[in-house]
Length: 157
Image (cartoon, rainbow, N blue to C red):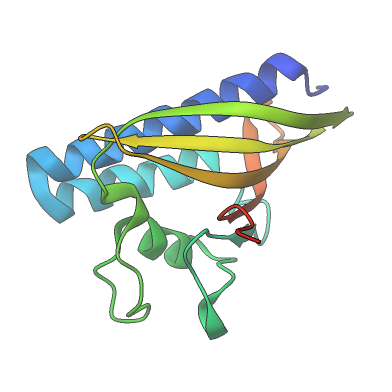
C-alpha cells in the first residue's frame, strides 16, 4: 500500500494533536494519566513493533541522546523515570497547539519522509520552535508508523 502526501499530513497532524492531548491529560489527571495516554500514542503512532525507531529527541544528550525503544521514548515524553534522570517530560509542558511548516518531503512506495519546522504553543501563548524530521513506513495493515523522528532546536549561530 503506497504512502501518499496526505498520509504524511495526517500523521503529522495526529502527532501534534496527541502531544496536546498528553499535556491535557497531565493537567487534568497528573502523571499517571499522561503516562497511559503517551504509551497508547507510542503504540499507535510509532513503529516499535517493526524494529528500533530512530528517535533523537529535541532535549536529550549524552549516552541517552537516542531513544530506540518505546521505554526511552515514553520517558522523554512524560519523564518521571529513574532510568532517564534528565527527562523532564516534553509532552507534559502544557502545550495547547502544534503547527508545522514544511521544508520538503519525499515519498517512495510504503515509505515517506518529512522535514520542516514545528511550532509548539504553550498555555501562555509562548511558542517554541523545533527543527523536525519524520520518517514513516506503512505497516502490513496500512497504518502509517513513525520509524524516524529527529528533532533539534534551531541553529543559533
